[in-house]
Length: 62
Image (cartoon, rainbow, N blue to C red):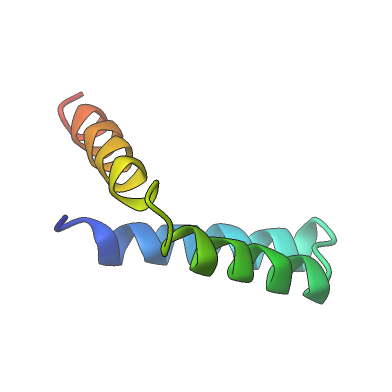
């Protein structure tokens, strides 16, 4: 998927805004990071990657 780097940058910015302005605690950040890390190692990862790809493609067409 060729949108992974920009998508990661956007998600990183969202996390930073949540941490800075919405009261996201450091342990929330760690839990979300670990969840994403372990989710990427499951059998659901290809389906999630495909879903994100379809959503990004549909958004870029409009």
